[in-house]
Amino acid sequence: MSRKLMCLFLMLFLQCAWSQNNAFSTNYANWIISTNNNLTEVKSNNIVGSEYIDANFYSSIFSCISEVTPPIRYNAFKEEMEFVLEGKLYYLNKNENCELTINNNTYKYFINYDKKENNGYLIILNKSKDSNYILLKKEKVKFIPAYIPSSPYSEEKPAKYVIEKNKYFIKIQNTLIEFPSKKAEFLKLFPNSKDSIEMFINEKNIKFSDEASLMLLINFLNKL
Picture: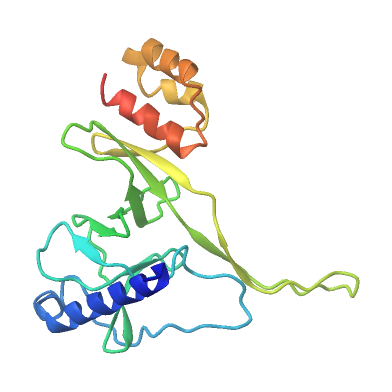
């Protein structure tokens, strides 16, 4: 069986399981599901790109409930978690205390997660009972309006959705900090372990723009 057929079979199975168990929709409607029923997605053929980094719906697991939950996808432009129920598109209510896992990514909603006081979903990249430091990633899609030139010598450009560069954050106790882009700025966060951390950074050639490097660094910090 091809990979595409397997994926299709899995999605049909998940949709069937979801439709057969409505405990989630009836018992948790006022807590999890947005009650607005006019959220049907509107598309424009004039816009290039997508609101989604991945537009597929995936099976979901919530850390705070045990009932069967629907396939969900992340709208990285609208900052919404979406699912379909009876042919209509719905959003999840935001919940800072509930983690959501879809497609092997665990998301959590944060209020004022950066200096601009933005709210949104971040992906938890490492977490265990022994993790004093947690690495998180922010994915985002932005909208760029159409460009209509004032001169006939310039080229008209359509409106488009563009995937922004990922941003990384480190959670130290209850404080969320945007990951510094330079070694000197990062070392200021750990004055008591500065020398050992700097030695590790140099030995492993840690790059502050590379996710794999940041994971190595976070794992090292959790072993100090």
